[in-house]
Image (cartoon, rainbow, N blue to C red):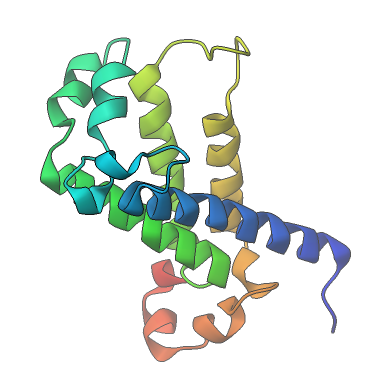
Length: 164
């Protein structure tokens, strides 16, 4: 049976959000000059978490987030998280775990600012991404325009469903 236009729409949306994570990883790693300059690139010794966590945190969790700013372990977890979530979403494999991990990341970024969004008093894109990522995690979003169907048939994935 063919894929419906709704499934194709959700597949395109999944790939687009995956690209967003992957692009953030690429730009922060190599400092391509979009959000990160070459001098602040991860490969040049820059910290991908220091700027945001030091200067953009506010609210009741400020001390927590500023305390982990620039920590090499936090930098590695953040960067590898972006890479793996981006690839998983674009390829349609491991979408469940990528969706939940991405939702957790969006929640953490949102709570780091913890004040009403700048341009909308109720909602910002981190909340929208959070909702989309949970949707991807709770459905078989990787099966359309991705390798999710084949991935879910692997013995390891059948044994450990959270890898789906």
